[in-house]
Image (cartoon, rainbow, N blue to C red):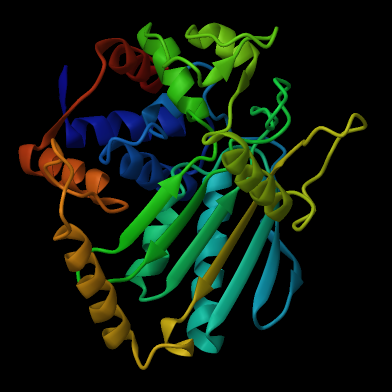
Length: 328
């Protein structure tokens, strides 16, 4: 069904507020969820359904556990992940603009950070190179195992150009965790070969996949990349664990780099990137290929289309449940 964008925004805002967030935090979360929704990213309003993302009533202030002129480690105080990551993004940008480089880690957040391409794009829009790594609970198997041990461990990279920034946003999992939740909510199957049931057998049933483990993309190489992200978002930032070694919070890492540390200036770097992209677009194409895509382009095109139309397609069942959450 089609839903007006402003209507969707209003219902999503009320659904977030119903989960216990103050107005300022509600607006931060809404912005990131709508970023995903309006780009066809599955880190969207599905997050507000089912158990949702309730605010932690015991959350404290976001604090700085350790800081230098180039770095900061934030103690999230068990606040919502998107709120903590937004604060870390601000700090990383500020440090990069003052000193050429900024690296910020977070720990002790109580929920996912949303579509991390949002933060990569934010940094790129400031004329900086942005790298974002996000941890999560044990949801994905390492290569050769079917036991959930790694997070889905997405990473995002934002690069400024003379036009729209390049934004790579990818999970290291063969399918995003919320992609499985969305399929489950819509009563659809998931693709073959992307998730195991609890007995280590491949399954297309999202319910069985949620009880099992996700496979890493790309075999050993994807699992190896996921392990690197795990290191950057777990021991590096001091993500806490219980007595059984399982994570009790989400660790994250952002770093921002001023291109002028190496490039002659920002404008020449942006022009060089844009020239490179033009050459990529002009390469000889294989049969049946209409256009060679670049990172972030699909989402930008989707965004442009829905904004021009003023409305967006949304599953009717998802819409009814979202409206119910918003209405309390």
